[in-house]
Length: 201
Image 1 (spheres, helix red, strand yellow):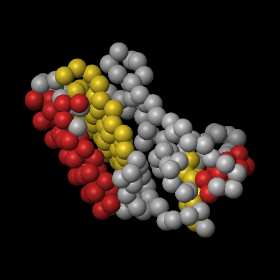
Image 2: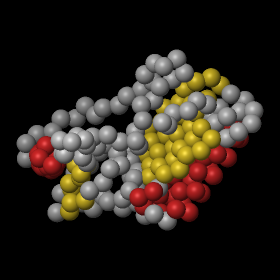
Image 3: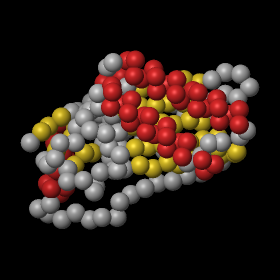
């Protein structure tokens, strides 16, 4: 049995023999298109039954959160794993990307890729798993806002590997994403996002 406290572990793991729950996570921002309509959402349709590993993990974690969430500010996160080791491993099985907005020109695409690659480099330099996040914006004719983030269970090298894989996904998505003006790429261990409009508070 392994217990570990974390605040940014992705929540789409129902296919795995363990349980991880997030109450609020900056890793999974809501995807909104330019016309402020909800772009996409995803939920698993699988059911769990008493006695399964997932059910037991979920029961424990919900009991823990109900008991230990502070009344003063009402926020707590935790994770509980019975089963194979998953902390510190890059999750490549759970991926989704959402892209929307207008189709921009090639200059926008080049600028966006440059910004995201720069942010990946900044995250790797941090050498601190509790700060594996970077965001910035470009200047000039085409302003692009971007962010990259890894879950805190990854070390710096695995964070880099996860983000590099996502950057390959951005390239392989082709015209479905870039040069679209808004894109969010989620894997189970990291996220990359860009937009022509600010999306972080």
